Amino acid sequence: MHSEFIDLVAEYQKTGEYRLFDQNFLTLIQENFAGYIQYLEDNSKGIDLKPGFVPATTFWLVMQSKVILGESRLRHWLVPTLEHRGGHIGYMIRPLQKGKGYGTKILSMTLEKARNMGLSRVLLTCNQDNLASARVIQKNQGKLTSEGLLENSDKIISRYWIDL
Image (cartoon, rainbow, N blue to C red; front, side, top):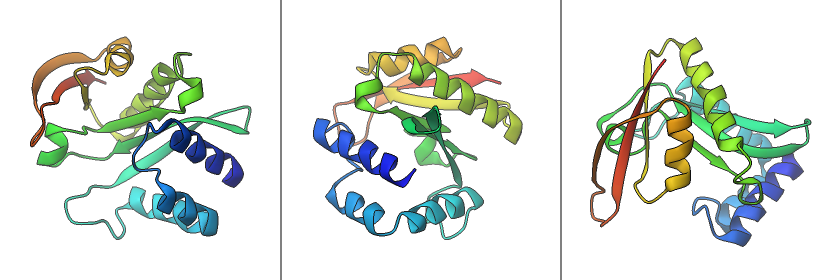
């Protein structure tokens, strides 16, 4: 999946959609993909977490064992910053695959993983103007419970809870 993941990152860079996939990240995964995978595994076990971070398990939505369509991260619990923005689950669909139902699918599958982990409900957040993400969350039984300004910004964050 190394070359496929590089293609995914390059697609995000080309469209400018995901700020974390910068040139430094692309260089890192080109040179040490095994190290990146180890980082994800360690993160899911809570090993070497940065202060304020919680364990998170990463999942990839893969089509026919060769194309990565998207990624989700399931945070095992919340800290105050994640209660404001971030929540239990974050997900993304590669730019050229958006609008095909994959966001709804990956969130549904990640919710099942959360159930299996023993969570009884999860929080998801999105920018108020991200209508596509709001629809995905609502299709997965998300209930809007609050909205608020993002610190140091004029962006409004919508918070949804999903009972498992």
